[in-house]
Image 1 (cartoon, rainbow, N blue to C red):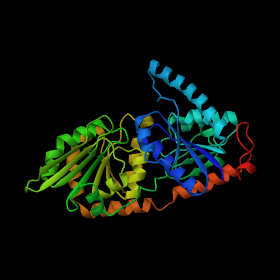
Image 2 (spheres, rainbow, N blue to C red):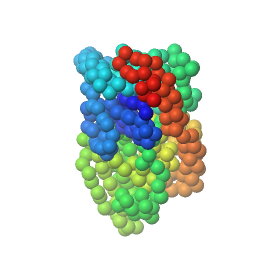
Image 3 (cartoon, rainbow, N blue to C red):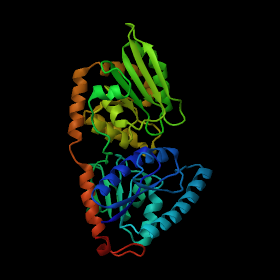
Image 4 (cartoon, one colour):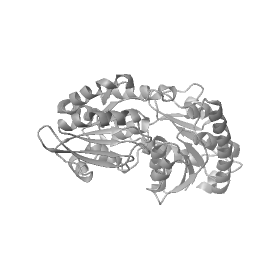
Length: 376
C-alpha cells in the first residue's frame, strides 16, 4: 500500500479528476488524501464523498492587479506552510497535482521534503502551475500531441483526464425521467462550467420562449450565486406542455448529459472529458478570457475530432440558428456520438493508476517521507 496526496482544488475541472483518481487508488488498496481549496464549490462536491479524506488549504487565484497579486503571493506562502504540515503528518509516497492555485504550494512542499511529484494537465495549452513546475516533476501527464518546453521526455506520459466512475452514458429516456423531463421531447442543456457563465445564462433566458415553442426542453445550470432553482412549465406552438429547468448546481452530471440531445457549454477540459464519456454532442462557446486562451484550443481540437462545433462568444447572436439546425438533425447527432465513442476508447485512468503505482514504489528515501520498502 502507498500513500498519495492529490492536490486538486479550486474548480470542478480540477477537483472532479482528483476524485476520480482517488477512487481508483482506493480501489487498489492505497490511501489517498485530497487537497482542496476553501471555495464553496469544492466543499459541495467533496460532500458527496464522505468516505474520502479531504484537507482544505488556504489560497486564492492569480491576479495581475497589484493588490490581487499580493493576496495571491501571501496565500501561497500560507499554503506551502500548510502543505508541509500535512505532508509531515501523513508522510505521502507521492504528490499528484492537477493544476490551479492549490498545486503550486503542494509541489513546493513536496520538493522541500524530497517527495516525488506527478502533475496532470488536461488542457491543450498548459496552465501556469504546470508550466512552472513541469520541469521539476518526476512525471507529467499531457494530452496527446502536447509538449512543454524544458520538460524531460522520459518524465512525460500522454493520458486524458480521469472521469468520476458515476459519470457514464445512461439511457436517454430514463435520464430524462429522473430529471422530471418528458422522454419524448428534445432536450437542450446549457452549461457554464463549475462557476457558471453569465452570457450563456442570459442567452437561455432570452431564447427560452422560442425554444419552448419548438418543443425543446431546456436545462440551464447557471452556476453558484447566479440564480435560484426554478422549474417552469410552458407551452409549445402546438399547445403541448414543455419544461424548462434552471439550477445553480448539478451533481448528477451523468444523467444530465445523457438526457441531452445537445449541450451548449464552455470548453474547459473537465467538461469536454465528461461530454466524451457521456457521448453528448455539443456546441462549444470558449471563454474568451481563459488563461492563455486555452479553451479556444480545447474547443478547436474537439471540433476537429468531429464531436461538435464551435461558436465564438462574439458570434453568440448566431447560436440560436445553430442550435435549431443541430438539435433536429438526428443523422448528424449520431455521427457526433460515434466520434465521441471513438474518443473514449483509451482507458486514461487505468494507465495513470498503473504508472503512479510504479512511481510510488520506486521513490527514494525523502527527508519528510518513508522509504519505498515501508510503502510496500
